Length: 191
Image 1 (cartoon, rainbow, N blue to C red):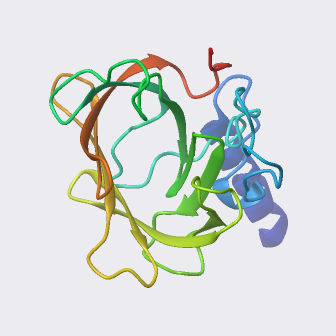
Image 2: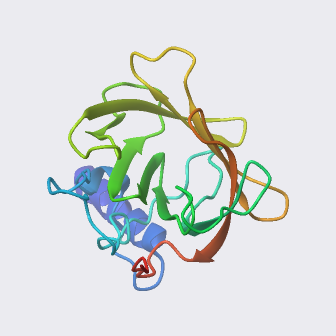
């Protein structure tokens, strides 16, 4: 009897977490996504959202970065046509301590728990072949990726007071992005 009652309570908790029309899936229930093994990764159109059916609340301390983001500033100025980051758009999904970042044809899917086991295990955007492993954490209101084997290197994203997202990378400096859509919205990159 007690086992049946605890199963019922578990089912009710998942249903409550799902909200109206939700499925109640937790981050653990959804397979890890990886960049497609083709030249250019996923191409110009984002794949279907990975965490769309996840109902788990964000982890404590996680900044809410969910959405589709477009670069508006690189090192204090708008990127000019033809510059590397001109027109760059990425989608961030979050559920529990899991975060999925799609941009430039790659998919970085990790748990922000500071472990190598749950780190991003994917490929570099440079050639879509070179393996990368980057440990993910949430620290002081920021999402941080630290590539394994590269001490002192980190990629950081955070929400700024004006609602834009700040992003730093060692190879590009400091960027600002504006939210142009929700995490489940479709998007196709223009020419």
